[in-house]
Length: 252
Ligand code: HEM
Image (cartoon, rainbow, N blue to C red):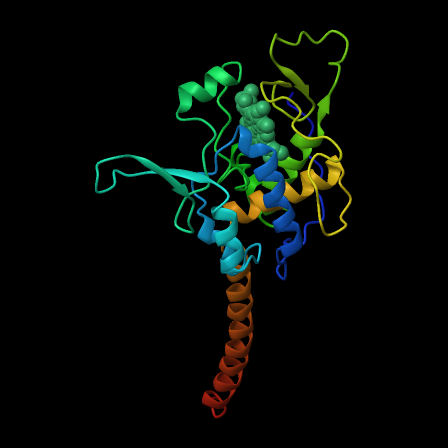
């Protein structure tokens, strides 16, 4: 049998009216940048996305400022030289390692996976009909529920009798329990300037929400359009009902 199923958290983006909590996404970005980004890339994310509608709600100027914090290799210039320049909106978030081999070498043989789509709802491996059932429950929140569980599921000591391989860490929720990622979060590690508690639990929630947005940037738009479609269908069903009555009024 596998690891315990992660418990379901109550996310602001859950349900048909769910929306991302912009403050939470901004904090989550900070956790990603200050902690996760030292090992994980997010190749599909560009700085301009940080100002996209339905996202963390940074202004263009704020996203530009965040981009300018990094140095990007560019060139060759007119003189034929490579050079470094501050990041721009069009740049991707930087990758911590030049390639997969370097990433493996620095992490005991396991390359930290790109986190861009990490929060995509998984669970198809559960098979039919379980995944159909999931679709009507909290299927969509499985990704962030797992990431939160993983980040809060480290144990300093493996249970008695568990042989932890050298260079691995014990995690309750990781399949097989031996993960090559060291426990990345500790209290007060990331400074929040909105008064939110600087606790592992909070960091884990915020970064999971941020990764959910990165993986599902159209979530809010999709839910809004879905709702409009449902309203349209209701009105249309009513119209059809009265049309049918009128058309068949004389039928005997
Ligand atoms: C794997 C998230 C920080 C190194 C993973 C996985 C996730 C994740 C979701 C995939 C687990 C799976 O396959 O089921 C995060 C987040 C971080 C963070 C959200 C920040 C809060 C770090 C840091 C390091 C690191 C700082 C390096 C010191 C790794 C490695 C793996 C991994 C090596 C592959 C583990 C294996 O396959 O055994 N991380 N991570 N991570 N992470 Fe992180």
